[in-house]
Length: 321
Image 1: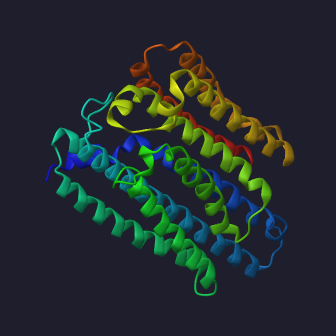
Image 2 (image 1 turned 90 degrees about the vertical axis):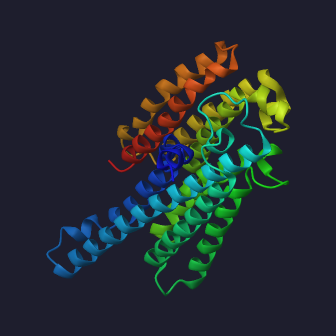
């Protein structure tokens, strides 16, 4: 077994993007209950301190398990994408790094086994996460999140695998927005707080839109090859020019939703720390505007993905400082 080939198929460079929503949801979810206990910590009651200590331990466990679960989902999605595009011939003439099934480095049967192993690992970690978050007293919450876990696995596989693969029908953007944005941020926040408020959807929209922008950029780069292969992404459907306008909308809208959240919950100038992440994104938009050679967009993928990761950290920090 060539371990290096499986590492390449896992596409480690996509992992920072995949955990961005977990980071935002964790910052906001952990901060809320701890903030309400600040006054209690000043008391000399030893019991109060012990309860606080247990909360931190539980929160750290939830964070680590949520990160592992999300990485599992992302690697599964990458394996499935490599497998699905590989057996359909979509990756034969693609731009960017080579895919393992299409190049013959991993056989379809080997990739199937890798997908099964990854699915089992991810489910085990997800069950552990659900148990730590909800225990035995919140069966309905546990059932709901287990169902969301199964749905995430099915969605990750069906993106490019099978005759009805939705990534070939232009629905990939919706998948990324829902799972990388809404589910990642709102779901993670709920694991800590056991509640949902309206404004938590605003940073969820931001992360979802930025993540969708990464996919759109990928589809802009691959537009010609996708069109020849019958992969009808949104970019293929609307064309190169409108794909640029769509890209502008995704990034600018993500900024507006974040700004709105800070406006509603404003406490300190630190909350605008996230603006730093939009400096490279502004330069990126200028590059896209001037670009006439779509394969050159490949170098921008890493920039947008890492900017999204930076946004998650700065937004989280800014709202807890």
